[in-house]
Image (spheres, rainbow, N blue to C red):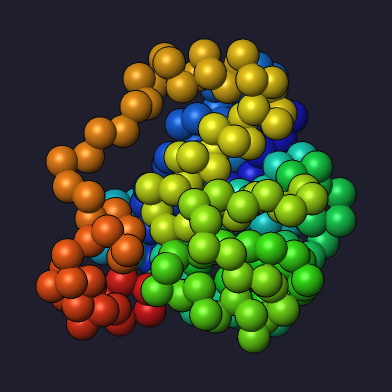
Length: 211
């Protein structure tokens, strides 16, 4: 089973690494980082690089596609190598998934038209103009498409996908091995529960988060 995780300049690291660390433990899984060209690809901060083992053309028909988000997503919203690869690879994929603003890339490629989907809360209103049906949920499944809300939701998406692929016992075994039982010190992970001042601070620096 070939799992392709897309990389592009200024991707969000956890969007890619979180699902990688879950899905790579599925029996028979072969996970490949893909980009327009093989080589190191920098994250949004610029201090971390993941190595793309293959070019998009080298992985034309993966079984599973995972698309992270990040500020660099904006550069690929129009027709180009990434959009063309997504449309072509999706024709034969069993599952196509995204994290954060990665769903905007899927929607821009026409893959989420009429489908329920989610993304980072700051960008949820951007889904509808692209043809998707915005949903305020952490993980949304519609057919073979599984989309996750912002950044950390990629882990929940990955466990959901692991369950669909390998079954509940396998997914739960991976969860237990990862000791994934989040207990954050703050209830600030959602604009509905975060203090007003925190929400305003995030809105004030929105451009550095999602643009």
